[in-house]
Image 1 (tube, helix red, strand yellow):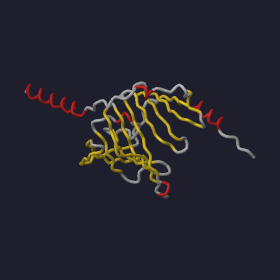
Image 2: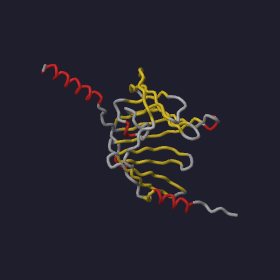
Image 3: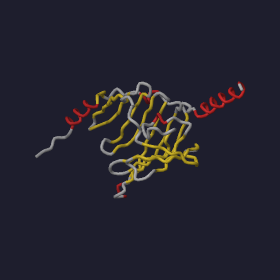
Image 4: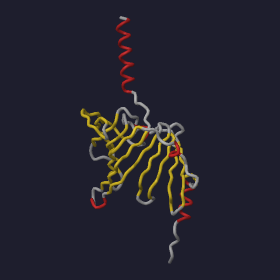
Length: 215
């Protein structure tokens, strides 16, 4: 009886260890396709690059109105800076991530099947949300934590082929490349020529920087 109980406990421990997600350091390169369901001429392709040393995350992306922007987030302290160059003035907008007590707006249903994305085996999942007309098939890496990306709360791994619903269309993210390597710590610093401000201070100064409208 004791032997059987010991084997049962060991089997549970092995299963937990087998599912443990290893720390990740390196770079992720995503292609972002914006899909306008009404006017396909508005569709665009851009990139997003994610760097992490497993404690800090840097996300470089392109936005329409504000241009290129960089997000630097501390995963332990749960605070981040958004670096923006607006009208030739450089801002580092500081925000603290509020304690997460809101239930996920997504539900997930695992499906059989796998495929390689950027050379690594990904698993399939059907994702449902109130904003989706129907469940959408997405893919994730079960052996890498989803903590590096603030998307799809509740998914059991790093999203690598996924969709985000916007008011005017859909963003389709696809991982193109993953690199396992040390990341230069300087990437996670705030450059000295960026002015640190709160979000409210940024809004006030943005209004002051708006060009005057001549009558």
